[in-house]
Image 1 (cartoon, each protein chain N blue to C red):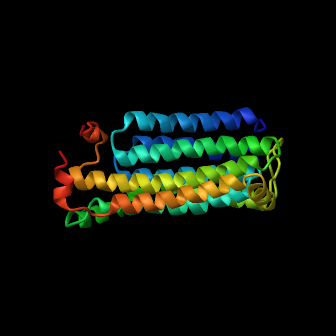
Image 2 (spheres, each protein chain N blue to C red; image 1 turned 135 degrees about the vertical axis):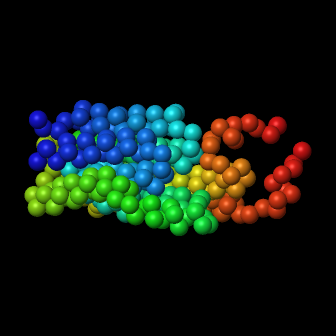
Image 3 (cartoon, each protein chain N blue to C red; image 1 turned 180 degrees about the vertical axis):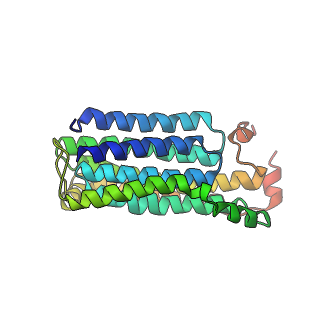
Length: 171
Length: 101
């Protein structure tokens, strides 16, 4: 059972290293998603199922989708058709695909043995996390929501198109 | 060999160092943002492992805060990247290294 931790850790390290060394941004994003998924499996084995689910849903889901949207916005036009064709080539998805299949096997294996936690660690249920969050960290929770609102307003302001004259000269 | 706290912390440290290398080496803004995500995730891994080791929920609460912060940072960062690309038609971080004083 401890072997699954080491396999997931090795996949995380390999995928993360591939993220940093790729030249194509979409390749790097695929490897980054695999890395986040393997960290989610590690979370599950450390007795944090709630955080593992959040890692998959928010990190590997929402945040990475935003990244992919932005990367796709950079190559519009006739060249993007060629780009799409290149994206469907096997060399594009074989590496992340093999790592993701290994992770899926680990997931099935872990769920078959569930519930299991590594020795020395304890399962902390979502109920405990929620009670702690709304009890001891209430101010932090409010500040986090304010931070998200500030991020929303900031992104809206930065992405708003401005007149060209305003962009060019301010001196 | 059972999984010890040291092993998890070593994994988190290695992931953090890889992300730091990405920030320092790469000059593409998208890759710099991705490396920052890797570093935040590694820090979250250390928090969750510590919380699980001492049987406290605080580690997972801290991970929730890191998650919210990462989401806000990505939205603002990618908006900045869009502005950079619209203004200079490049994603090179060095192109925007001079201030307009």
